[in-house]
Image 1 (cartoon, rainbow, N blue to C red):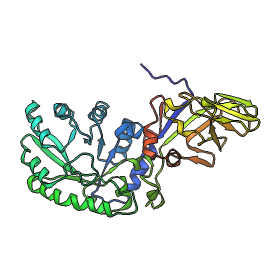
Image 2: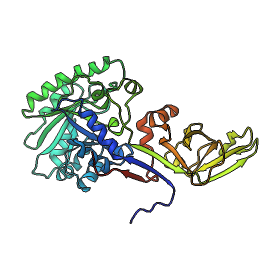
Image 3: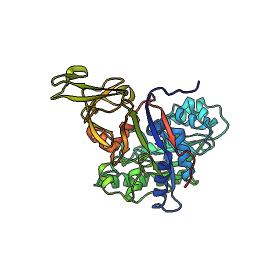
Image 4: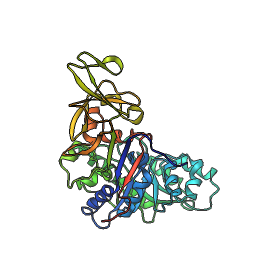
Length: 378
């Protein structure tokens, strides 16, 4: 069934920004360093398939996701590039991944044992080994644990093609913990190299590491948040090696405009009362679209000017205090540029006391994604 758009609200994704951010990173990397484009969580809310295609066009050599479902979606959309699933996948689904040519992340000896019992595949399963050097999520932590894993590794059935880890503080000014993680990674990597005597793709650099020109990039970097034009932290935004171009804008229109009297209340809980005669506009999006209630008192752009959201955000609507009456249908920009003013996800994240990643990922599918510059012209 064809999607029909009736509500004047949409997210615009400029795919030329995705390409430009990859080109900017490529210019700073050694020529032999590959870029793995991270498109998990529907491309951080931007659209996984569309972003993946743009990233590959720009020179990324592979893709990374969090879930097997996400990888299969990319395959079924016709994408043939290497895909790594970075999250845990149950061993009973490994054959499905193998059928689709998808590489899994594996780090448990017990997982290998279950896979040998459950698998009916005659083809080697490609995997990357994950090492937990201090993030504390998933991965092999200790040398004894690694030796147990390698002892159960049947290389006639498993094809180890890569090794990686993830950093907890690479976006912070102090690099002590980053260096500590590197110091844990290197000896574990040497053990793997002694056991798995073939070429491995080693990738430990995320967006933060690649933007900071820290050492130890090895063969590839995983370019996630930076690819979307967003900085991993305030520190990196203030100390950036090049400018990132935000890809996402959120635009809608005024659906109602009214003049209220002094003392009149707006929205649930009467948390906002007009202090004088005021013009109030209604906007047809709310927390059902990912505009959380904490957006109250933040600003949107109308007529190239900042105007405050007043009263509690509703599920489907919210209200803005206007500086004058505007026609119904006047454009409202939540994220992006309007005239000389701009509001981007980092500023919103600061208001919400969170990170830009979360703001983008919480924008729901009720807001249709419109893709600009799908065909590369540069």
